[in-house]
Image (tube, rainbow, N blue to C red; front, side):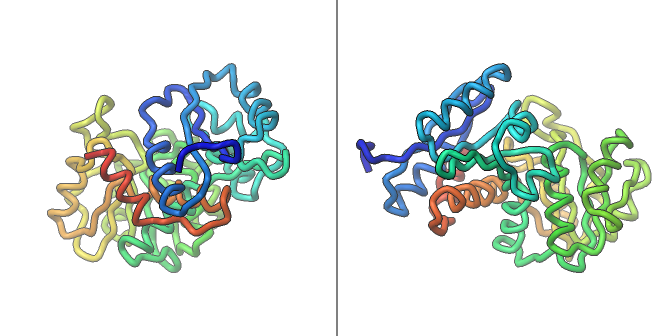
Length: 280
């Protein structure tokens, strides 16, 4: 659908942002849903976030996806926060509701949705391990706890960061040092790599933990999606675990944003196909 005078605008803001898959993903979804919307990318440096949000309100931009380096600062600048965004102190989605900018965080909900859709896995009553303690890890810890996980173990080299992440799970959160994590990894129903280990250009050949501990009946997810198949995923799969990369979470968290902005169910098959096509 060609843009017109009635077209509604959404965008991703961040720096760098030109590599983002979001425009292709959301525009495919808008077209499939028959919506007169379009989605673009705006390069916004750290110092420009406040002005960007003023512009969002002034121009009537309906929705923003928020990426690095703005997630934490955006939480302090929007008019209102959802309970999840407030607890995380981070925003990856903003909805313009009649001039009121509402901050959301869709990462955790998107991840849980991706587990249900891809593996038929629900976290309720399960033992979960999250590797890492950054923004993505924290959103997963909170979402898994809110979804009823029996235990959420955080494995991270920096104890203080791990403790802050595990605290989001309340009395079901626990911190384990990497050197002592093998038994928790073996016993886990779900293990998630939320670190950058294995990512192209960062530590492409590294392993976030020893995949020899994995076995049949476990779910192992690597949030890395460049490359699509990491060494860790290959080895975990060889051990019998059900494995997935970061593509499903990427698509499902975007689908949550789509639904927040439009009020229309997201066309997940189209969004998954758009991501897959973009990544080859």
